[in-house]
Amino acid sequence: MPAAALARLVLLEARRGGLPWLGAASILLGLALAAFLSQVALTESLSLQAALVAALLRACAVFLIAAHVATSTLREINDKTLELTLSLPLSRAAQYLGRLAGFVACGAALGGAFALPLLLWAPPAAVALWALSLALECALVAAATLFFAMTLAQLVPALAATAGLYLLGRSIAAIQAIAGGPLAVASTAHDIARWSVDALAFLLPPLDAATRTEWLLYATPAPGAYLAALGGLLAYFALLVAAGLFDFYRRNL
Amino acid sequence: MPAWVWGALAATLAGQLAITSSRTGQAAAEGALPPAPGVHALRLASFGEREAAARIAMLYVQSFAKPDYPRLVEWLRVILQLDPRSAYPLFSAARVYAETQDAARSRLALEFVYQEFLRDPERRWPWLAHAALLAKHQLKDLALARRYAAAVDRHTSAPDVPLWARQMEIFILEDMNELEAAKIMLGGLLESGAVRDPAEARFLAERLKALEARLGNSK
View 1 (cartoon, rainbow over the protein chains, first blue to last red):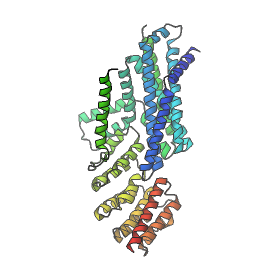
View 2: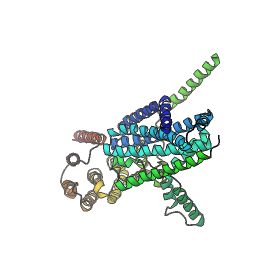
View 3: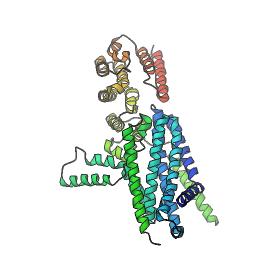
View 4: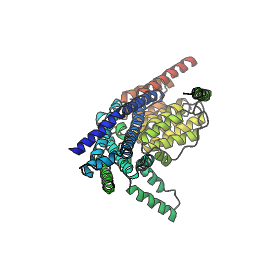
């Protein structure tokens, strides 16, 4: 199956490009941070370690996958490898989805590996839920980065657009809370600002509900809430894939 | 490679080391504790990692040796709003900041514990129980101690709250010295499972030892 061969090539490139080593370095960094924190905390040392290591590894996973997807895709574009593969008797959907499947597999591997150290501080069920959510989050980031890299065809704009989408997705709930604060002076300008923020929230991935540290510290999420969070990620992932395919089919040789 | 490149590299590295070595030993938080940010600002800065941000903020606050107490209390309040299930702000208020020799400051910290206890009594009673002990033995304010003890009694009903905590008022009124009371309370906390964290258990054991030494010297 040609799409599977493309996915395999992406995984091979990730292995040769040092992604596993960077993942291992991130885990080591997390463990070193945990060892340091265990010495400075007066209480809640275990939850402090779990919370900060989870936050660090989540950020590392997202950064590594975004950087890998962007550099890999842009290298293909700049080396004209993409043009070569487009000339092959292979549907564009198979090419795009094959590449994306490889990146999603990289994200899943990072998510799984990054969950392992958290077993030191959190129950296995909570860690498993967190890992699945992180894997889906990485898949979403991979899809977003692939879309931006293909569309913008420049490294810095592609990474900046992905970072903007990701960070806004994670903080939009806080921005909405600020915009709807009870102490704000009611005015037309304020109403417009609040509506703009609400409208923006409709366009962003619901990342604030995913991969939550509180699952590791306090209790596993209610099944409904967890499935809703994952469903939100999957729906946005599908949107990004559709948008990416739309753009990819419009690309001229 | 030209020699001047080696020279430039060595000189800039030496410059960097000289600059950083002159800063070594300076605590990052030597200045005054700044005013606490709003909870929404902290939430925004945390990018959704509220639990991690709350704990980082606690470590930051903890790094100030002599904080301004009104500001400190505001920080603790904001951190607790950021992660209401965290025990760190109340633990610090009751076990660290309230145990100062300055009675006015101690009262500020204890009042913070009392106010926040009322928001979630079933979870936060251990710190108000300790606050009651501090009010009795450190501030010598029996009325305040009884007020805190009565609040523990009145507002807790969960089955995991031990009997001695519900009867805190009697405990306060008993003619018991500080060490005996602290030992009973610590033993009770450990037995009830309220203290599970190894760092906290270590900290409390050290505090108990220090109290023993202090009372031993005063005899």
